[in-house]
Image (cartoon, rainbow, N blue to C red; front, side, top):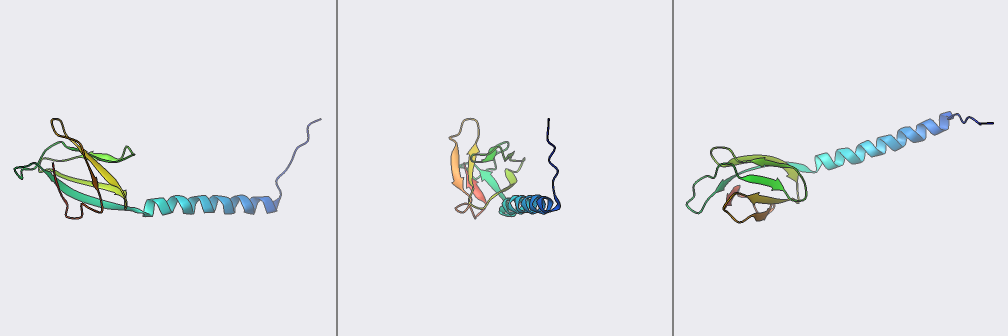
Length: 104
């Protein structure tokens, strides 16, 4: 014979508290991100179009526009991987790139 177990009221508040804790932890990771923007230039100080700018270790990335500009939401301690055909891929710390211009 199968026994049915019904949840009591006291179990319900524990589940709700657990879900609230999970939601708070998830929201903290979202709040730890910042919006960065910058310009990718070549050795002649010309903007480079179509450069891939990706947060290292993630699939979070973007491509530079016609003026070499990009904008991206990343973690505060993130490292950017900047790559373009014919150039060496560079890794730049967000903290080090506060000036906003990345030489390629």
